[in-house]
Every structure is written in structure tokens, then in C-alpha cells.
Length: 148
Image (tube, rainbow, N blue to C red; front, side):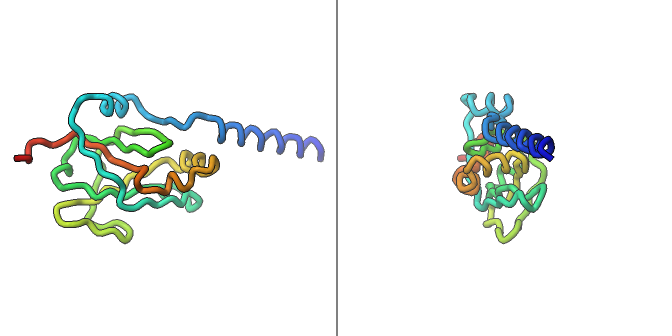
């Protein structure tokens, strides 16, 4: 019985160590290169954030209201303060997600982060930071073609 308790304690301490001291910056190099470039950028913050990782996969995400002129953008960068930045390809949009309705001339993008990363942030006491819609943003290359 003592051996089992010892193994459980070692496992729990290892889990705490991995969860609390592993670096969280998951930023990928493409995102870093784009954000550091001198390219003009358009940024939008989240309209709504859902953080419910205990419900399983795909329950940590933000909804963004993006002008329609960025609907055909080749990529965007998702940035979550405290977590990092991620280079992503557009994968769909809608006029309605959850209780959020797109305003005229806009569409909605729902973008997720990994559940394990969200759990790590929550365990580190950053739930409220993760749940703050001002800490989530999408950055697009600026579309100058329609300005005038």
C-alpha cells in the first residue's frame, strides 16, 4: 500500500511540475515573422470568449466579428495574451455563432485553442486572463485595395 501511495505522490508532483513550470509560449515562427514584419496589419478583438475545457475538446474559443473585406484573406494570426500567437488559414465563417449575430458588413470567425493549453493556464491561475475578450485578437494583412 505504501508503494502505491509513493507512486501516486510522485505522479502528482510530476504532473504539477509539468503543468506549472513548462513554458506556455506556443507561438509559431510564421506568426512571429508576420507580426514582426512592417506589413500593414488589421486587428480585431474578440466579441465573445467561451472557456469551458471541462466539457471536452472544442470548448475554449473566441468569436470575432470581422469586416467582410477580410473574408478571402489567405491567413490570419490568432493571439492570446499569455499563450502566444498562431498562424492559421481561414476555415469558415458564419453570420451567427452561439448568441452572437454578425453586424451588417461583417462575418463571424470562431477560433479555438487547444484544451490542454487552456487547462494549463487555468491551473496556473490565469482563468480570468484567458476569459477576457480583450486578450484575444485576430491580425490580418491589411487590405488596402478597397480604401479610397
